[in-house]
Image (cartoon, rainbow, N blue to C red):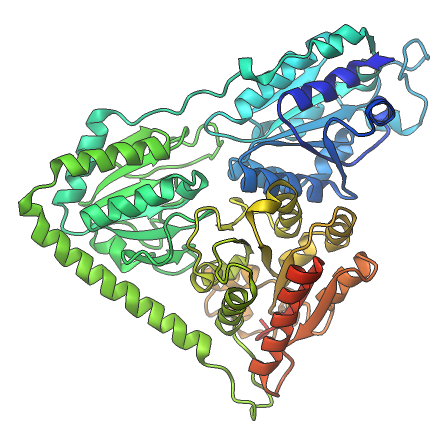
Length: 608
């Protein structure tokens, strides 16, 4: 017997979906039945089914899969409650511009037994709401109800066509239980449409006029600045941006990046910022030409605005006015807003710059390059000093710093990984208030070698590591999640490490344990720098602290995986912290690389 669910699953497979991250419910009988039919007939299912005990973990894993591979994954959740339980991960896939197909069942509309799938459980009544898709519609690129098995292939193909076109993002489909139980002829399953006839929209090119204008402005500038945020999502853009900076002698600053925009070692790369109550960069104040690449927030005017006389050019892959992204109030004082694929845009600007460069530009460009190289080297030296300055063993109240930990982690990976480098290591950065430090001290070179969620919801990194491993295991020797203690709990570690063991997806977790939520404390101080809260004795008093001793994050992973994961807490007061951290991190890396198990190092640092 074949049903709409048979057509649905066949259509996903035909469209290239290889993994479904599923959280099953009462609306999925026909899907479960057809999956078992596939196992009976073929010995396996058409797509890999990843059972996820939590919906937000499922969607975050699908996001990590898509970020690591560039291919969409699918998520199946349960009616209205499962849709809501995806929670902040919905925000992340939207803001991160990640293509994911989400399917949710819906309660039956019949209750007298007149149709297969009619209501036969009490929950099917209370889970029926007037507009289920409204829960997520403002975050989706496309939503649609499946109303018959006959239309399933076209609905799925259209959804994925939209999801994978700029600006990429999530899509949401839903269907009533009776519809998914509807019987169909075997020919309907075999006739499911292939995706190749539903191509993504071809990327938009930058106009010749825009490319020539931007290239000329950069060449003639006294102090050109390139602000890159999300351009590295298109990995081919990374060498193109490096080349442009080298050609014109422009500084590069990564602002709220979600992917590697330029190799860390590029001599004109001068820093990361997340604009958190601190100045942007001295380059913003003096820049007379600014090129902004795929940025939602290139600067915050109330904190630091560009030079009012600067020429500003904004390029965005598909949404320069942030209309599709549904960002409410948004503005940049720009001379030019360009809707263009970042790779095509950088190719065009590079070509225009090469054509326009003249001997008269050479002296000024060389001066800029020399100054930027010196600044880059000084920046790296200052970070080296911070990494190498550990508390004296005699200090009973001394604590390691995050630069200490990250420097040791980076060097350990370089020593123990098969390639003896970070070139085949994937860093998933969910450091939140420590975002910039993780970027700085892990010093990633390779395109795609470090990622964030691209959004503001916490709880992405553990599941993303699972998804990345499932999709791109052959591309990486080691996957590392670097996560704050607050974010670690948002990641639903009990579910994440269970999945990791079930599907053998080993990764290393470094928990930045500063005893609570530092972000809300810093937000408070940003508004009330000398108020009552500034005088609170501890994070616990302020109600944002957890205390460094509870919980033991490493042992949550051990328990959730029934002892399969390895875990250790380090960083108590006093002792030789350098030796303690070195032993723990070295063993953790070894466990993941050699034993192929998860490892968690709970790093107790200075408490908030």
